[in-house]
Image (cartoon, rainbow over all chains, first blue to last red; front, top):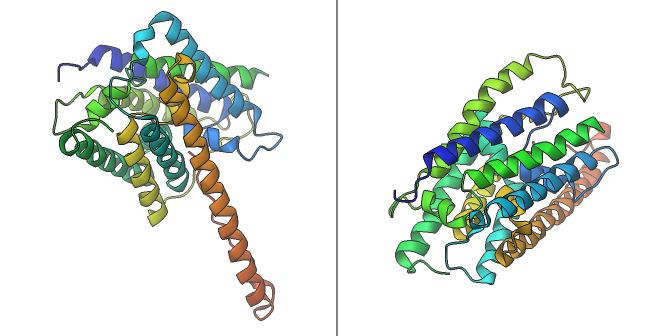
Length: 143
Length: 167
């Protein structure tokens, strides 16, 4: 547990909770990032701008982080470009098939006590842990 | 306009939360998923913090008749556990564990100058397109089937499109 950052992670989590709550209070929307992005792939007149501005906000937030603490973007693991491409494909496809990702199911859905989100979150943590076990303990840590 | 400003600022706050929480570092995400190695519980603390805040505020906000800048709340309504939910989450988890990225942190990392984040986001969007393509083909097939039975079963055979709850 030498890399554990409880205080920073708690502050980060609180900010995420505030962001999700603001989206609900003001706009009536769930801050599920895969759903917000996927909605941009089938653009409709009334439903595109808020999605695009949310994603632009994410990227802008990334820029602020980059300026304040560039070390916050350290990859820290050995993965080839192909490994990242394969993983991205699985994440994009899986998030749509499973109706959500870590933000939608893991944060918003669990907060709403949605059984679907609880099942999805337990499932992706379990298969994620299995993938990590295989890479770290059977394949030597790199891909 | 006000609603769009909220979306932009919320996206920004979300990204900063991910960054401060350490979630834009794939090694920390993989460290959380590595239960057999040197486990890093940081991701769990991020989730607990976010859920603690949102689960309270969610209930307060839902007592309102409507959101402030929009006529209605758009909330998922499905409650059934089906194979698509579990299968999709399972695939998602494998990708998440392999790269240490999920959609939010990957988008937040787009301007970090890290090529892996760019590769991941492009592939992720391709995966979403692939899903959409398969879904369109599937619905078209279902429609064709429904039309052929509709000629026998009068007009009752309207195609039932299962709405996905869009997280």
